[in-house]
Length: 347
Ligand SMILES: [Zn+2]
Image (cartoon, rainbow, N blue to C red; front, side):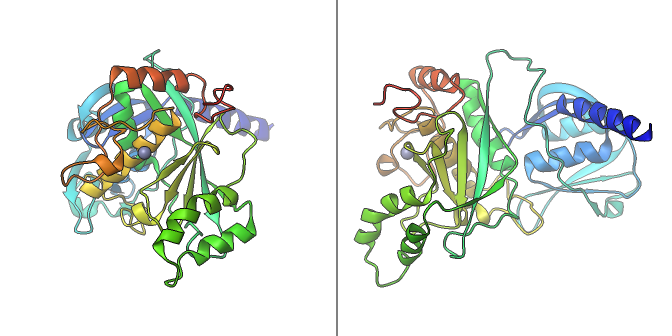
Protein backbone atom coordinates (compact mmCIF):
# COMPACT_ATOMS: atom_id res chain seq x y z
CA UNK A 1 0.00 0.00 0.00
CA UNK A 2 2.71 2.44 1.06
CA UNK A 3 4.65 1.70 -2.06
CA UNK A 4 1.71 2.60 -4.31
CA UNK A 5 1.21 5.88 -2.53
CA UNK A 6 4.86 6.78 -3.03
CA UNK A 7 4.71 5.88 -6.72
CA UNK A 8 1.66 8.03 -7.27
CA UNK A 9 3.30 10.93 -5.45
CA UNK A 10 6.39 10.45 -7.57
CA UNK A 11 4.38 10.62 -10.78
CA UNK A 12 2.57 13.73 -9.65
CA UNK A 13 5.83 15.43 -8.78
CA UNK A 14 7.43 14.69 -12.14
CA UNK A 15 4.30 15.77 -14.03
CA UNK A 16 4.18 19.03 -12.17
CA UNK A 17 7.86 19.69 -12.81
CA UNK A 18 7.76 18.90 -16.49
CA UNK A 19 5.42 21.85 -16.96
CA UNK A 20 7.91 24.15 -15.29
CA UNK A 21 10.31 26.00 -17.47
CA UNK A 22 13.15 28.43 -16.93
CA UNK A 23 14.58 29.95 -20.10
CA UNK A 24 17.57 32.29 -19.88
CA UNK A 25 18.77 34.72 -22.55
CA UNK A 26 22.39 35.44 -21.59
CA UNK A 27 22.92 38.39 -23.94
CA UNK A 28 19.70 40.20 -23.09
CA UNK A 29 20.02 38.97 -19.47
CA UNK A 30 16.29 38.23 -19.36
CA UNK A 31 14.18 35.25 -18.33
CA UNK A 32 11.09 33.53 -19.65
CA UNK A 33 9.60 31.70 -16.68
CA UNK A 34 6.74 29.33 -16.16
CA UNK A 35 6.91 27.85 -12.68
CA UNK A 36 4.08 26.62 -10.49
CA UNK A 37 4.20 25.75 -6.78
CA UNK A 38 7.85 24.76 -6.68
CA UNK A 39 10.00 24.73 -3.52
CA UNK A 40 12.49 27.60 -3.46
CA UNK A 41 15.51 25.33 -3.64
CA UNK A 42 14.17 23.48 -6.71
CA UNK A 43 13.48 26.78 -8.45
CA UNK A 44 16.97 28.06 -7.63
CA UNK A 45 18.42 24.74 -8.85
CA UNK A 46 16.63 25.21 -12.18
CA UNK A 47 18.02 28.74 -12.41
CA UNK A 48 21.52 27.42 -11.70
CA UNK A 49 21.26 24.68 -14.35
CA UNK A 50 19.97 27.07 -16.99
CA UNK A 51 22.27 30.05 -16.31
CA UNK A 52 25.41 28.39 -14.97
CA UNK A 53 25.44 30.92 -12.10
CA UNK A 54 26.72 30.19 -8.64
CA UNK A 55 23.59 30.17 -6.45
CA UNK A 56 23.74 30.23 -2.64
CA UNK A 57 20.85 30.19 -0.22
CA UNK A 58 20.42 30.71 3.50
CA UNK A 59 20.05 27.25 5.09
CA UNK A 60 16.51 26.47 6.21
CA UNK A 61 14.90 29.16 4.08
CA UNK A 62 11.62 27.76 2.79
CA UNK A 63 9.17 29.12 0.31
CA UNK A 64 6.94 27.89 -2.49
CA UNK A 65 7.35 29.91 -5.67
CA UNK A 66 5.15 30.42 -8.71
CA UNK A 67 5.28 32.76 -11.66
CA UNK A 68 4.69 33.03 -15.36
CA UNK A 69 6.16 35.75 -17.56
CA UNK A 70 8.43 36.43 -20.50
CA UNK A 71 11.33 38.77 -21.20
CA UNK A 72 11.92 39.95 -17.64
CA UNK A 73 15.34 41.37 -16.75
CA UNK A 74 17.11 39.05 -14.31
CA UNK A 75 16.66 41.12 -11.13
CA UNK A 76 12.96 41.79 -11.85
CA UNK A 77 12.38 38.11 -12.57
CA UNK A 78 14.00 36.93 -9.35
CA UNK A 79 12.20 39.62 -7.32
CA UNK A 80 8.83 38.56 -8.75
CA UNK A 81 9.54 34.93 -7.93
CA UNK A 82 10.93 35.39 -4.43
CA UNK A 83 8.47 37.94 -3.09
CA UNK A 84 9.68 39.05 0.34
CA UNK A 85 12.73 36.79 0.42
CA UNK A 86 15.81 38.92 -0.20
CA UNK A 87 18.49 38.36 -2.81
CA UNK A 88 21.61 39.94 -4.26
CA UNK A 89 23.61 39.57 -7.44
CA UNK A 90 27.32 39.79 -6.80
CA UNK A 91 30.16 39.55 -9.31
CA UNK A 92 32.63 36.75 -8.72
CA UNK A 93 36.37 37.35 -8.80
CA UNK A 94 36.69 34.12 -10.80
CA UNK A 95 34.17 35.39 -13.38
CA UNK A 96 30.48 34.69 -13.72
CA UNK A 97 27.50 35.62 -11.61
CA UNK A 98 26.70 34.83 -7.98
CA UNK A 99 23.10 34.90 -6.76
CA UNK A 100 22.62 35.03 -3.00
CA UNK A 101 19.20 34.36 -1.47
CA UNK A 102 18.62 35.11 2.23
CA UNK A 103 16.29 36.37 4.92
CA UNK A 104 18.85 38.19 7.09
CA UNK A 105 21.92 39.45 5.29
CA UNK A 106 24.12 38.29 2.39
CA UNK A 107 26.49 36.48 4.76
CA UNK A 108 23.76 34.06 5.78
CA UNK A 109 23.51 32.69 2.21
CA UNK A 110 26.07 29.94 2.75
CA UNK A 111 24.55 26.85 1.19
CA UNK A 112 25.38 26.08 -2.45
CA UNK A 113 22.35 25.15 -4.49
CA UNK A 114 22.66 22.06 -6.69
CA UNK A 115 21.56 22.25 -10.32
CA UNK A 116 18.13 20.78 -11.01
CA UNK A 117 17.66 19.40 -14.50
CA UNK A 118 14.58 20.49 -16.36
CA UNK A 119 12.47 18.00 -18.23
CA UNK A 120 13.24 18.16 -21.95
CA UNK A 121 9.56 17.88 -22.87
CA UNK A 122 7.53 21.02 -23.17
CA UNK A 123 3.88 20.02 -23.06
CA UNK A 124 2.50 23.46 -22.61
CA UNK A 125 4.13 25.27 -25.47
CA UNK A 126 2.61 28.76 -25.64
CA UNK A 127 4.05 29.42 -29.09
CA UNK A 128 2.93 26.89 -31.68
CA UNK A 129 5.46 28.09 -34.23
CA UNK A 130 8.35 27.19 -31.93
CA UNK A 131 10.23 24.07 -33.06
CA UNK A 132 11.76 22.08 -30.19
CA UNK A 133 14.72 19.94 -31.15
CA UNK A 134 16.10 17.45 -28.61
CA UNK A 135 19.89 17.08 -28.77
CA UNK A 136 21.76 13.98 -27.61
CA UNK A 137 25.02 14.77 -25.82
CA UNK A 138 27.94 12.36 -25.74
CA UNK A 139 31.34 12.59 -24.07
CA UNK A 140 34.09 10.57 -25.76
CA UNK A 141 35.81 8.25 -23.34
CA UNK A 142 39.33 7.21 -24.25
CA UNK A 143 42.69 6.22 -22.79
CA UNK A 144 44.24 9.06 -24.81
CA UNK A 145 44.19 12.39 -22.98
CA UNK A 146 43.79 14.28 -26.26
CA UNK A 147 40.44 12.53 -26.79
CA UNK A 148 39.05 11.75 -23.33
CA UNK A 149 36.44 14.31 -22.31
CA UNK A 150 35.75 15.13 -18.66
CA UNK A 151 32.24 13.89 -17.93
CA UNK A 152 32.07 16.08 -14.84
CA UNK A 153 31.70 19.05 -17.17
CA UNK A 154 28.23 17.92 -18.06
CA UNK A 155 26.10 21.01 -17.96
CA UNK A 156 26.12 22.48 -21.46
CA UNK A 157 22.80 24.23 -20.84
CA UNK A 158 24.23 27.76 -20.39
CA UNK A 159 26.04 27.39 -23.73
CA UNK A 160 22.77 26.22 -25.28
CA UNK A 161 21.02 29.23 -23.71
CA UNK A 162 23.38 31.45 -25.75
CA UNK A 163 22.86 29.42 -28.94
CA UNK A 164 19.09 29.35 -28.43
CA UNK A 165 19.01 33.10 -27.92
CA UNK A 166 20.36 33.41 -31.47
CA UNK A 167 18.05 30.72 -32.88
CA UNK A 168 15.07 32.43 -31.24
CA UNK A 169 14.85 34.65 -34.37
CA UNK A 170 14.01 31.47 -36.32
CA UNK A 171 11.73 30.12 -33.56
CA UNK A 172 13.94 27.09 -33.19
CA UNK A 173 14.94 25.82 -29.78
CA UNK A 174 17.52 23.11 -29.04
CA UNK A 175 17.00 21.08 -25.88
CA UNK A 176 20.12 19.27 -24.63
CA UNK A 177 19.57 15.85 -23.10
CA UNK A 178 21.34 14.07 -20.29
CA UNK A 179 24.98 13.44 -21.28
CA UNK A 180 26.14 9.91 -22.05
CA UNK A 181 29.57 8.41 -22.48
CA UNK A 182 30.70 7.18 -25.87
CA UNK A 183 33.56 4.98 -26.99
CA UNK A 184 35.44 5.52 -30.24
CA UNK A 185 34.25 3.29 -33.09
CA UNK A 186 37.81 2.47 -34.17
CA UNK A 187 40.72 2.01 -31.74
CA UNK A 188 43.33 2.22 -34.51
CA UNK A 189 41.93 5.60 -35.61
CA UNK A 190 42.00 6.66 -31.95
CA UNK A 191 45.75 6.07 -31.80
CA UNK A 192 46.27 7.80 -35.16
CA UNK A 193 44.36 10.81 -33.79
CA UNK A 194 46.45 10.92 -30.62
CA UNK A 195 49.62 10.69 -32.74
CA UNK A 196 48.61 13.86 -34.61
CA UNK A 197 49.64 15.79 -31.50
CA UNK A 198 53.28 14.70 -31.69
CA UNK A 199 55.51 17.74 -32.25
CA UNK A 200 57.21 15.97 -35.16
CA UNK A 201 53.95 15.80 -37.14
CA UNK A 202 53.79 18.67 -39.68
CA UNK A 203 50.63 20.80 -39.55
CA UNK A 204 49.98 20.17 -43.25
CA UNK A 205 49.73 16.45 -42.44
CA UNK A 206 47.29 17.20 -39.59
CA UNK A 207 45.04 19.30 -41.86
CA UNK A 208 45.07 16.57 -44.49
CA UNK A 209 44.26 13.66 -42.19
CA UNK A 210 42.37 14.99 -39.15
CA UNK A 211 38.92 14.83 -40.73
CA UNK A 212 39.42 11.34 -42.20
CA UNK A 213 40.62 9.97 -38.86
CA UNK A 214 37.74 11.60 -36.98
CA UNK A 215 35.25 10.06 -39.42
CA UNK A 216 36.58 6.64 -38.48
CA UNK A 217 36.51 7.41 -34.74
CA UNK A 218 32.91 8.64 -34.69
CA UNK A 219 30.37 5.82 -35.06
CA UNK A 220 27.73 5.73 -37.80
CA UNK A 221 24.74 6.04 -35.48
CA UNK A 222 21.73 4.06 -36.73
CA UNK A 223 19.52 7.08 -36.01
CA UNK A 224 21.78 9.61 -37.76
CA UNK A 225 19.70 12.23 -39.54
CA UNK A 226 16.86 11.54 -37.13
CA UNK A 227 18.27 13.16 -34.00
CA UNK A 228 20.61 16.06 -33.32
CA UNK A 229 23.79 15.02 -31.63
CA UNK A 230 26.82 16.67 -30.00
CA UNK A 231 29.98 14.77 -29.27
CA UNK A 232 32.48 16.34 -26.89
CA UNK A 233 36.10 15.29 -27.16
CA UNK A 234 39.03 16.78 -25.29
CA UNK A 235 40.81 18.64 -28.07
CA UNK A 236 41.66 18.74 -31.77
CA UNK A 237 45.13 19.47 -33.22
CA UNK A 238 43.82 21.67 -36.02
CA UNK A 239 41.54 23.37 -33.58
CA UNK A 240 38.03 24.50 -34.41
CA UNK A 241 35.59 25.89 -31.88
CA UNK A 242 33.35 23.08 -33.10
CA UNK A 243 32.62 21.35 -36.40
CA UNK A 244 29.55 19.77 -38.01
CA UNK A 245 30.12 16.38 -39.64
CA UNK A 246 27.30 16.07 -42.20
CA UNK A 247 27.86 12.37 -42.92
CA UNK A 248 27.52 11.54 -39.22
CA UNK A 249 24.89 14.11 -38.28
CA UNK A 250 27.13 15.13 -35.40
CA UNK A 251 28.50 18.41 -34.05
CA UNK A 252 31.94 17.74 -32.66
CA UNK A 253 33.07 20.07 -29.85
CA UNK A 254 36.58 20.16 -28.40
CA UNK A 255 36.16 20.58 -24.66
CA UNK A 256 39.30 22.72 -24.23
CA UNK A 257 37.59 25.49 -26.17
CA UNK A 258 34.94 25.98 -23.51
CA UNK A 259 36.28 24.15 -20.46
CA UNK A 260 38.02 27.34 -19.28
CA UNK A 261 34.58 28.92 -19.06
CA UNK A 262 33.44 26.55 -16.30
CA UNK A 263 35.04 26.25 -12.88
CA UNK A 264 35.15 23.17 -10.67
CA UNK A 265 31.81 23.99 -9.07
CA UNK A 266 30.14 23.99 -12.48
CA UNK A 267 29.82 27.78 -12.53
CA UNK A 268 29.96 29.34 -16.02
CA UNK A 269 31.73 32.61 -16.74
CA UNK A 270 28.62 33.89 -18.45
CA UNK A 271 28.71 37.29 -20.05
CA UNK A 272 32.36 37.07 -21.10
CA UNK A 273 33.27 37.60 -24.79
CA UNK A 274 34.64 34.05 -24.89
CA UNK A 275 31.34 32.68 -23.58
CA UNK A 276 29.45 34.45 -26.35
CA UNK A 277 32.01 33.43 -28.98
CA UNK A 278 31.60 29.81 -27.95
CA UNK A 279 27.79 29.92 -27.87
CA UNK A 280 27.81 31.65 -31.29
CA UNK A 281 30.02 28.86 -32.61
CA UNK A 282 27.60 26.26 -31.25
CA UNK A 283 24.71 28.15 -32.91
CA UNK A 284 26.72 28.28 -36.17
CA UNK A 285 27.39 24.52 -36.20
CA UNK A 286 23.75 23.80 -35.35
CA UNK A 287 23.00 26.02 -38.37
CA UNK A 288 25.02 23.62 -40.55
CA UNK A 289 23.07 20.76 -38.96
CA UNK A 290 19.89 22.61 -40.03
CA UNK A 291 21.14 22.56 -43.62
CA UNK A 292 22.66 26.04 -43.85
CA UNK A 293 25.86 26.50 -45.90
CA UNK A 294 28.40 29.30 -45.37
CA UNK A 295 27.67 32.83 -46.54
CA UNK A 296 29.95 35.83 -47.12
CA UNK A 297 27.72 38.38 -45.31
CA UNK A 298 29.43 40.12 -42.40
CA UNK A 299 27.47 39.76 -39.17
CA UNK A 300 25.64 36.65 -40.38
CA UNK A 301 25.63 33.58 -38.15
CA UNK A 302 26.73 31.39 -41.06
CA UNK A 303 29.67 33.50 -42.24
CA UNK A 304 32.64 31.50 -43.40
CA UNK A 305 35.23 31.85 -40.63
CA UNK A 306 37.92 32.72 -43.19
CA UNK A 307 35.91 35.70 -44.46
CA UNK A 308 35.23 37.18 -41.05
CA UNK A 309 36.42 40.77 -40.68
CA UNK A 310 37.25 42.79 -37.58
CA UNK A 311 38.51 41.68 -34.22
CA UNK A 312 35.27 40.16 -32.93
CA UNK A 313 35.50 36.57 -31.76
CA UNK A 314 33.10 34.04 -33.18
CA UNK A 315 30.59 34.43 -36.01
CA UNK A 316 27.79 37.01 -36.17
CA UNK A 317 24.25 36.34 -35.00
CA UNK A 318 22.00 37.40 -37.86
CA UNK A 319 19.98 35.10 -40.11
CA UNK A 320 18.17 36.00 -43.34
CA UNK A 321 14.49 35.12 -43.97
CA UNK A 322 15.62 32.54 -46.53
CA UNK A 323 18.06 30.95 -44.05
CA UNK A 324 15.32 30.77 -41.42
CA UNK A 325 12.98 29.13 -43.94
CA UNK A 326 15.59 26.50 -44.86
CA UNK A 327 16.50 25.83 -41.23
CA UNK A 328 12.88 25.51 -40.12
CA UNK A 329 12.11 23.10 -42.97
CA UNK A 330 14.99 20.91 -41.80
CA UNK A 331 14.04 21.36 -38.15
CA UNK A 332 10.49 20.16 -38.84
CA UNK A 333 11.93 16.76 -39.81
CA UNK A 334 13.22 16.55 -36.21
CA UNK A 335 16.73 15.63 -37.37
CA UNK A 336 19.86 17.22 -38.84
CA UNK A 337 20.83 17.31 -42.49
CA UNK A 338 22.60 14.09 -43.40
CA UNK A 339 22.78 13.86 -47.21
CA UNK A 340 21.22 10.61 -48.46
CA UNK A 341 19.35 10.07 -45.21
CA UNK A 342 17.69 13.38 -44.31
CA UNK A 343 16.84 14.47 -46.96
CA UNK A 344 16.86 11.04 -48.65
CA UNK A 345 17.80 12.49 -52.01
CA UNK A 346 21.36 13.39 -51.04
CA UNK A 347 23.03 16.55 -52.31
ZN1 LIG B 1 30.94 26.67 -40.63
